[in-house]
Length: 180
Image 1: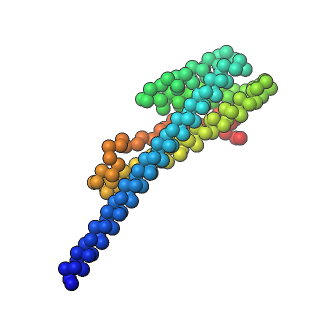
Image 2: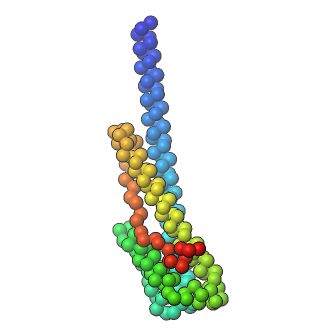
Image 3: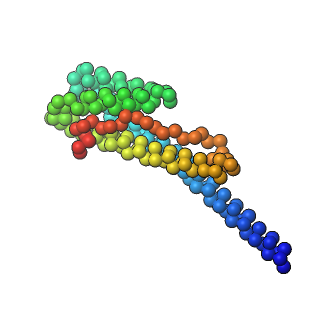
């Protein structure tokens, strides 16, 4: 009777441990899926912002110098490799702030045909970049914390996935768009 109880207790402990490990592995897998979706959302938001900036630069509603600066910054952000991407996207944010925060920029653009729509689209694209980056960096933080846990490291529950990296860019919106 005593040996049966010991075997039963050990069996229950083994089953509970296996269930817990399986749950932790499943959670880590779900976090990686969330991270991939957040990364794709961030990529889409950055791509949309670049497209709107290029559309604005090519609209002939801006002076040639501003159009050239915006187009060059958007092109650099689009063609940047993985190592230069954060820097190029930050440069685009700075160029956008420099252009939009010019005196009477919004008024001049709003008066032009189609200018108000472009401003609204730009404001939406800039806001989506801010929110997408925050969501992505939050997912990275949670995933990194889960990967650092003793059980995850010991049993290699994350497999061979790379340790996720934060995406740090200067994504502050232009001052005139931040108040909307």
